[in-house]
Image (cartoon, rainbow, N blue to C red):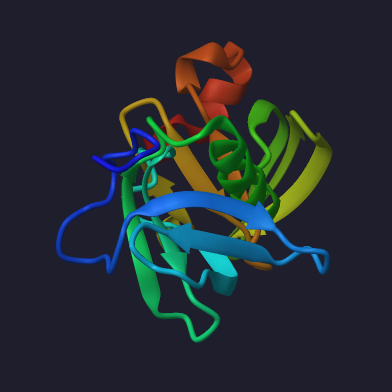
Length: 170
């Protein structure tokens, strides 16, 4: 465990332990690692699989894309560092959550879905089952033809009409 109480670096994939993360004047992320005098500048944050573990297995990579730290968990990080990581991931992985399916239509192998999300109304198309990733019996992700991702957090929390439209995917 390092000086910040952070014992979350995963073995095998990391070169050090993250002490803190900060932004410089240009807005770039700077990673300070235990035992290293100079920080890594312009690092990036990446969520690893599985997607069901949203605050676990986060990779910090240098400006060449090489992993410098793999965080097993965000628990135990200093609050400011955790906040920066969560903010960066939220900006990078914009995933509106589907609250209701307004309309659903399948035509010539393309499914057209209009939905209310936590970020507003949206209409998108999916081409096949490969565009749907099931995370559990009640949770799934839809990837549209443009690569955007929409999440159903809990199928059973949707109204019955919405459930009928998409329950065949679960």
